[in-house]
Image (cartoon, rainbow, N blue to C red; front, side):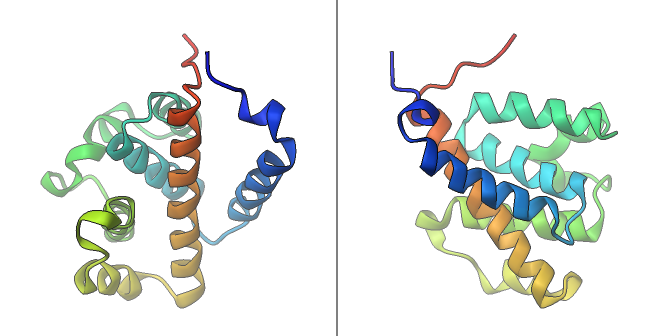
Length: 144
C-alpha cells in the first residue's frame, strides 16, 4: 500500500486545493474545466481522476455522448470552438515532453480567449496534471 499524501503532507494538499478554489472562480465555465480534467486524465491514464471528473461533469449537465467522445473530439462537431481550443491545448501541455506546445495550438486558444482566460486555462491544465501525478503515484483507489 502506498502512502496517503493528504494525511502525510496536509499542507501540500491544502496548497493544491487553494489552486482548485482559485480556478473555480475563473472565467472558464464549469464544463470547460471538467473537459480539461477529463482529457488530461485520459492522456495520463488516471482512473481516479477520470472517474471523479466524468461523474462531476454529468452532475453539471454534460452529456454521456460528449464524455464518450472527448478522446476523439477532433472527429466530431459536438464541441464548441472554445472547447476544441481547450482540448487541443490540454493535449499539448499534458504531452509537453513529446513536442512542447505548438504555435498552432497556442494561437487557436489565444484566438478564442482573452489573455486572462487563457492564463487561467493554462493553470487549469497544469493543476489537473499535478493531480493526475499524485493520484497515479499514490495509487488512489477508484470508488465503485
